[in-house]
Amino acid sequence: MKKILFLLAIIIVSGAIIRTSDFAYLAEEESYSTPESAKINNEIKTINEEIEDRKNRMQKIQDKQKSYTQAIAQKQKDKSTLNSQLAILDNRLAKAELDIESVEIDIEKVSLEISKTNLSILDKEAEIEVEKSKIEKVIQLLYKEGNIDTLQILLLNNSLSDFLTQVKYLENVNQAVKESLDNLVSLKENLEEEKIQLGKKNDNLELLKSDLIDKKELLKAELESKETLLTQVNSSEAEYQKLLAQSKEEQQDAAAEIASMEKLIRAKLAALQGKKLEFNENGFVWPVKKNVITAYFHDPDYPYKNIFEHPAIDIRAGQGSTLKAAASGYVARAKDAGMGYSYIMIIHGDGLSTVYGHVSKLYVQDDEYVVQGQTIGLSGGMPGTPGAGRLTTGPHLHFEVRKDGIPVNPLNYLQ
Image 1 (cartoon, helix red, strand yellow):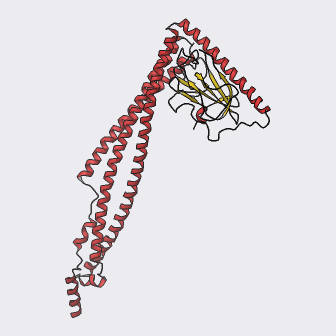
Image 2 (cartoon, one colour):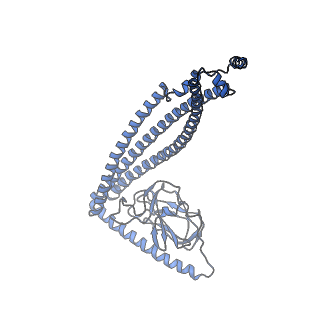
């Protein structure tokens, strides 16, 4: 009996008495919730509503864009008249304006998503601090009571029932530690994922801003295209039909000449023993500074599709911009057509060739070898200027890539 009392005295002096109240809060701990987290949740709810509003607006714009595309396609089937051509240009203008509005709304939407993610990160960081605090408290209690064995717990309780209750609380403490640690790991993983997604959204936002600049440049090109046409024909149907006939003939002659010259030059090169044309393995470089593409390969919305197909891409380039060889090759044709359609055609290896249209000034000649990136001329396209041709949408480079004499999409080859 004296030994038991002596042991009890030591335990009491050392402060190693286990109190149910020390651990009870862990079992009764409520889920994380503070006025600050409630505020964040309300802000996230408001942002979600705004994001949904942007989505609805985007859907309406997409419906309008679809109707303009259908209108353009319908007008392209109509007989080619000045009025139908102007209608096509007007629809392209309206569609371009919608494209700008669409990108602007998309930018707003991504900005809202970024704000939402930032709020979510703040909330997660606060939850992490709470979980860390809980773990610290549990570890402190475990450290404090760490030297108590089963006999001591039994001696400090009045009955077996009290003893079992005390053991249960210790089990609860261990479970609380495990759950807090698991929750902390999960919160940190979620936080890291949120930060990764935030980075992607920021990157997407920068791309959208760049796209917006391109769309505005494209709208400018569409406006110039309409003004150019009206200037060329002086709002006269007769003048338009005359220009149309001349343009068709000019394009047909150029296409026939390009096809003929390619066969001729390839046969000539094949006859030269030991003369092998090497294709640049790094692919094609952009012949002008990478810029807005105003018309794509076989573009269904091409403004003059009802006149002829578009076997190239049109790259927006200021009048007189430097033209560079997309790859090393042999100049098959460097045609100076005066006030007509001037172009340069270069033969490359692997059955590929490139054509550069609306050239205002030529720096190379037929039968000349050029290297990739070499300056070969200056761009054009301004109506009424050398090399522009009969019918043009304004300053740009018409760029073709051909494979075995057949036009293919240049974007599949450009770096």
